Image (cartoon, rainbow, N blue to C red; front, side, top):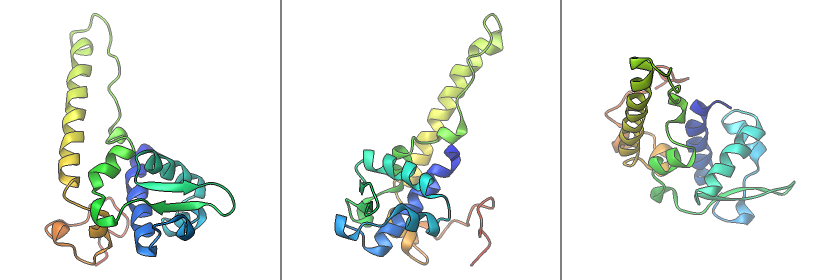
Length: 158
């Protein structure tokens, strides 16, 4: 899975678990079920849920009777936490080392790294105002002023 898909898949998985009321091991949703909802491969879901579990947002149980469940209510999980759980804006990449002796090559990587930090912080600040519960609403107040990103599937669906 590409880095650029981790955040949307993670947000989708958390919203699905909330929608299904999966708040305990007895209500765990299997990775195959989560994968069918995205849709993606169950292996992709297991990779993302491992990151979410490491961040303390969900718990998982392996095996045939395994699955994932939320450790917190969706109203308390902000999307900036989800972004951090899946390694932030890693999909923007990282600057190459640059060529020794080149005034641009020696200077630009540090500045690009700072720009990536700025992007990560801006994304985090914006996402800190949005919860998993908001994603489940038809027209949440916090997102009302925004149009769907044009690169997203179903962006023009209303």
